[in-house]
Length: 476
Image (cartoon, rainbow, N blue to C red; front, side):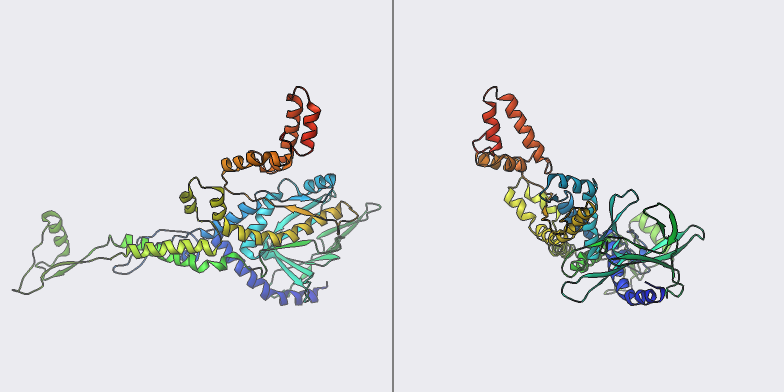
């Protein structure tokens, strides 16, 4: 890509990029508990009992409610605490893929769920490092602007990645613009918003002769050799819309009513006395007399006059506001497809069926997210297999087994398992055992097998054969 075409591409994609970034940053504000109610305080929740210059209304408390972060983290924890198990029908290859994904795969998957919830789509970038190891990382969504084809396949044709970088020589920030295609990447830099100073970043990549190892200099462009753009999108839903749009208005209503309630509680302590035909002229003397004598002298002009002391106070509609807050709180969790923590207190020692019903809305949301993430993880696994030089990397069957993390009734599950044990395989029993970690069922089968062989005393071979047959005779 030359400089002039790149300037044109940057200008054409800027409106879409700016609109996307605004939605993402708004979601990030709410995820960081910096709701619109706190805009006047630069995003900080503050109490202020003397923030307004009004006679009866002094308080201007602005405290943000953290619903959005709770709903997003609920799904991320429910869906991505345990990463999906990958099976490509080859144990040795499974181990190599697991090693390439690394120990932090679940944390990165969790971040992808959070990013996709806040932006509508999350992005992952993979590359081969200097030690020829497969590496991947999560890219902030507002850095990426994809360019798709207009056909039904919606193929990723090119990708723009823009971000800020500090120049250590000048202590100033400038913008880096990467342009990726299926063959190569070219890097540019600029400082001006109209890109009139855009230039190639000629020292970005060092070029080395593979055969001789000789240093051939530096370049702004390099062929990455993947045969496709090494970025994978993780969309949240069909339209790639962030979750906040579903309940932002409700959260704002809750903040408005809640803070109005707190303001009234502060303001109700402000009492204004209205004096009619007060006999004195000095208000300080009036307050002193009232404090000392618990009474004040008022002038009267005769029967029927209105001399006396009245007070102005604020009435608080407690019942109406409580009703609005409770209804709004409940609707936020319904529209956000989450679980209200208050509901956990209500169920007590509930049955497994009741707990599953409690997770119904969250499971529906998580299932949709999983369905879109499956294709993306498949693409990541195929990229790893291509790096491992697997001959059928693009056609091999890939099975993903996802595990939910939720509260469950372990006693009920164990009792159910005991009732069906004689009809179930050792593998099924190990997987269903509430005391066995979801990723440790294979170790449990092996431990059970060793225990039978060692402790039977005699007839060990028979017990071993029964276990290998699936434990259908009750030995498992």
